[in-house]
Amino acid sequence: MTRQQLHEAMVILRREVPNWDVPVITLNAQDDHDPYRVLISTILSLRTQDQTTAQASRRLFALADTPQAMVRLDRQTVEQTIYPVGFYRTKALQILDISQRLLDEFDGIVPDDIETLTTFHGVGRKTANLVLSEGYGLPAICVDTHVHRISNRWGYVKTKEPLATEMVLRKKLPKAYWIEYNPTLVALGQQVCKPTSPICSACPVAAFCKRVGVQRSR
Image (tube, rainbow, N blue to C red; front, side, top):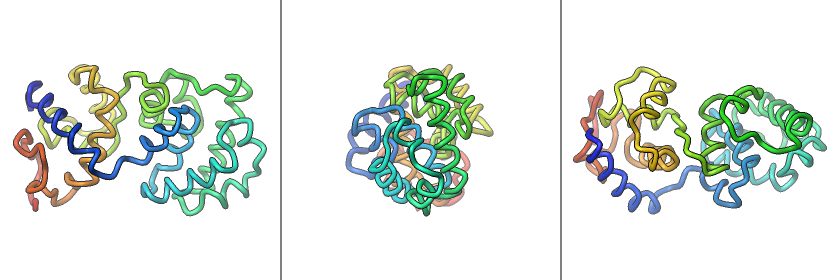
């Protein structure tokens, strides 16, 4: 995929994606672009289906949507509120630990740099990049399984794992697309560009795709 083809693909997807299911983290950010809510929602989303994450996030934020309010909850309450997200017991501990550290070291404010964010318990580069892009509106590239898979399938990158994909995209992807690249490709991956047997016949950008690694499609 060339730079011009990428541009054309993104223009098309900007038009099509609003008609599809929007990734849950973007929906949460649209409420008020609050970095803390984005951070906690992203932690809940790991290894969890979007609908389950959305429901758990709403229940939890109805009880506490700031670090100050969160640390007033006990672990059992958080566990019961976020169940049945994946690893809910571990995530309850992470949420309480992160909230307490934010109060102790950062005056309750979520840091806006990736190096600091990734020092928090359970926060990796994917989560940190989402906080920067969705919570702060800063240029950041969040590479999850969809972004990694589709970027390679398009032939835009040639990498073996997400961290390598992020590093290549940081050098190659025009900065104007950094924030929207993740939610756009997540929506495409959920709706059309499935991991196995993608629905190429319904893909609005199929003309630009090299179909790298695709052995079977619909």
